[in-house]
Amino acid sequence: MDITPYVEGLRRDLVAAAESAGPEVRAAAERLAFALDPAARLALMEAISQAAAEITAEMPAGGVDVRLAGRALDFVVDVAPPPPPAPPPPPEPPAAEEADDGGVARVTLRLPEAVKTRAEELAQRSGSSLNTWLVSVVRLATRDDAAAPGVDLDLSSIAFLGTDDRHGRRRMTGWL
Image (cartoon, rainbow, N blue to C red):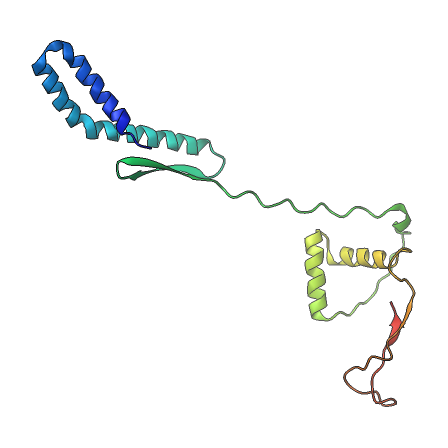
């Protein structure tokens, strides 16, 4: 923002006010106007800086700064970053067909450490405990419409590291 036009406007008004008093007073007014130029600039900059401070006080975050660049003023507006997204809503309660029958069974589950760590991360991301998350995963896997429930999968053709005493290779069979 260039404040020179405002300072020149003050100088013109002072000289115009001295016009009616004669040439000596007009010459004195012109000299005073040039002497007042720095003081007028400083007063305008202070007023603008105060306005920026009041605007900053009213902002919920961020601020407005006034910087001097030569004889011009620059405004710098700092806007706060947007708030982080809200966490996902908690999982919906189970549907009526998935409701517990009241009994609870205790199961010991041994997982590789890396799988357990990943499961804990996913549970935390969904906003539930590891146990609650595991119960949800098992519920989904055991629903009637789950992918290929009860299908036997023969993996005997896949060779694994290590050997089996009887066949010279390890075999795996099971269901998916």
